[in-house]
Image 1: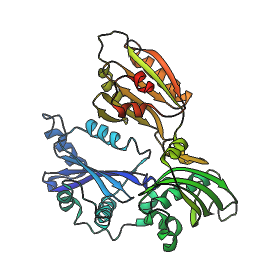
Image 2: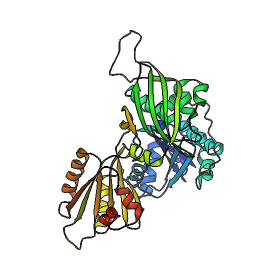
Image 3: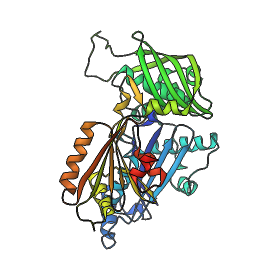
Length: 405
């Protein structure tokens, strides 16, 4: 008693994590109608309830770096606006574009990432097996074009720098599937530098020739942090059969090999110095002393629907990421360069942390337009390193006291 409605997945496979969303009509006699007729009937029967009664959504978080299906959210008894807002919350920090998928492609991904959980001996999310048996287990996915599917879930490369950064990231993460896809070589796919699925924190690329790049990569492994020099060899495929270069067409690259030239362990404070960047903290207080600043939370969610949030004892930390992963299209990659700003909202103070003047000016304009009659700027502080998050984690309720200590 189920019928596939639609599905999409973020094209963030090369970042290591994707969000897969699948909507099903469920619980109705699907032989009584199909497609638009079924959807319209379900909506009509749900009018008194204010939600799509016969619709269930499955939201999977797919981790290609050792976790497999890391999370599953099941949405029922919700209207479409609430569903779409939930989707945006979940993919808001991934920085990708949503790619429409078919029924067989969805089943293939769910099965593939379920096997990753088994391979890495990682527990599946609660209720996953029941959902898997009811919705996905019975599909024959042999006809799925897995190469084309993988391509669709990876963004098109804008430059050699972007491609090299992604390949170093996949190398550190021990991403066998990703490296095999771009190299066509099981030998290259099996090469690795880390003991576990490591995390790339910093990468500087020096171009040595058209197809050879020397990278200084800093990454986290199971036993600490490492600084490595790695040569990446790639191939270009940007010339058409008529031997003319078409600059408006997507650039295609393939991976030839890695060569680790050196690798040494480094201290955590050295890593912090490399990835930290200047931070501007603006402090806002209410114009009316009796105004509860925490009431701004719902307004922030409305202004930035994809904003991420974490609740702390002293307040809520909001984090807004850029809407794409263009920070990889650079000679220097920093893991936190996708971060646009942080907001820490307490009962009587709003702290805004930005990392460049353009972003600060933009957010300041939004604040004046939306909160101009409610809050006022009382102080601005500039730091050479990131401090607001440490303040939030400290549990201290006085920022100036935190700085003094």
